[in-house]
Amino acid sequence: MRDKKCNRSSGIGGQAVLEGVMMKNKDDYAVAIRKPDGEIEVEVDVYRGVLRGSRLKQIPFIRGIFNFLDSLILGMKTLNYSASFYEDGEAEETKLDKALNKISGGKAETILMGFTTAFSIVLAIAIFIMLPYFLSSFFSEYVRNASLLAIIEGVIRILIFLGYIVAISLMKDIHRLYQYHGAEHKCINCIEKGRPLTVHNVMRSSRIHKRCGTSFMFFVIFVSIILFFFIRVQNPVYRVLLRIALIPVIAGISYEIIRLAGRTDNIFIKIISAPGMLLQRLTTKEPDKSMVEVAIKSVEAVFDWKAYLQDTFGYEIDDSWLVDEDEEDTENSERSEKELSGSDPT
Image (cartoon, rainbow, N blue to C red; front, side):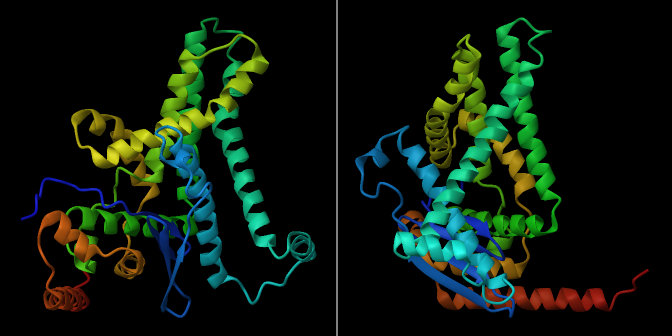
């Protein structure tokens, strides 16, 4: 019999892509896309990541660095894949593509992916790590206390992060991306709460999840503020270099925190997870049923949720019941639409 109070980690995770959802279970991942013609395309592949098989990826506080890189690389790869369904016509091979393919032996796409990933990391460091430091330095003429300056830098970093999230959430395409992000979370929450993975159950599940990338980014900001507060040097050049050098440390610590948050439900974890989960109300939106259908396809391509429910919560799923539930949900929706269309609009 299942424990209704316990939210068990399934180990699966994912991200939203253009008109779809990517789900990853161990080395396997699936990308489900709602194509322009309305059909759902599902691609299943394997991604073993950087330093595949290395013991470094099993060492606490070090594994987080490589997991972060893997998330970036796979995320960009699947985003590009989803975008390919919405490109106008066939993309022609550019001169750069031809030159890179010639030099690299047909690995131009991999090289460009690596360059894009590296550029994204540099840009993120510049905006969220270095910019707050340089902005806070303008207060040094008026604030002589080093601790207060560190706090000001931290506040600026938080404001820049919040401003970035709010600004991109106003974009129409990003809003749909956030809806698919919500569908991804709802599917995982549905499973981890011990509910069968149906559209009906997913729609009534929460769109907030402790292991979300938004929460991870909050922990990165939070951990950086603490480290930069206590680890200081006087030389301005060394201060810049120190912030860059501590980035792997920050990523490693943040990964361990969010990993712990996904497996633990004590009061301390709830408190430190609360800000990140509040931010998810900006980075996730309520999906419609068609989006949930896409997310379910992605989950089922790489994860046996029926076996998970049996092993974790101790009961089997009756397939006939699942069909009946979905049909009932559809009938209720159709009945509601008829009632609304027949009602007096005044």
